[in-house]
Image 1 (tube, helix red, strand yellow):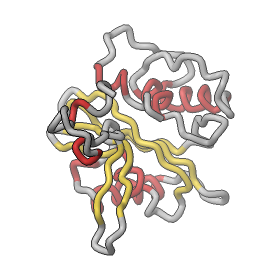
Image 2 (tube, one colour):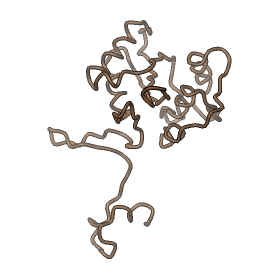
Image 3 (cartoon, rainbow, N blue to C red):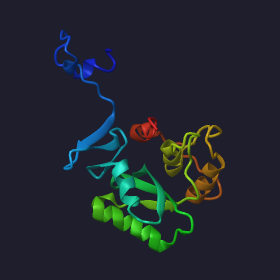
Image 4 (cartoon, helix red, strand yellow):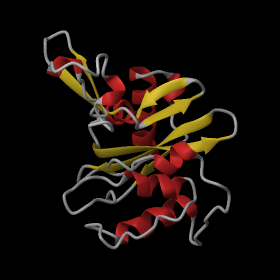
Length: 192
């Protein structure tokens, strides 16, 4: 009870349930049509040059491109902006990752969110690293983008795709940075 409810409780002596709100960690907004729109995890945010970008809003912008079947966004360190989004997309069958497709993904982000949401890179991947239940493992992608060890991936539904993506991003030889991992990147995707 202390771990979840006490932080937001206004009256610790109250027996009324409304005085004991719970923070689930998911963001939502009340849309004009009266429905709640779930935005995703509030801790999956990339701070790009002072702009707090939710990864779900960037992924949704990518999904407006008709060729895109799945999208995942991860933060990558940048000397000028601090962090920048890197986008991984899997395309629908029959579509190829042409420069035009990548440009349409970048343009969709700039038009829907703003120029500050321009990704550092867009990678067209054969498949996303997923758990057996189908959840995309963004922490694995973040590790690849930031040249960190991805850890044990043998429990993934498709562990071989991790090495394919790593080679695409880092090249033939494994490159693991010895620098300390920034805290926001180290914690990214832990709640996937």
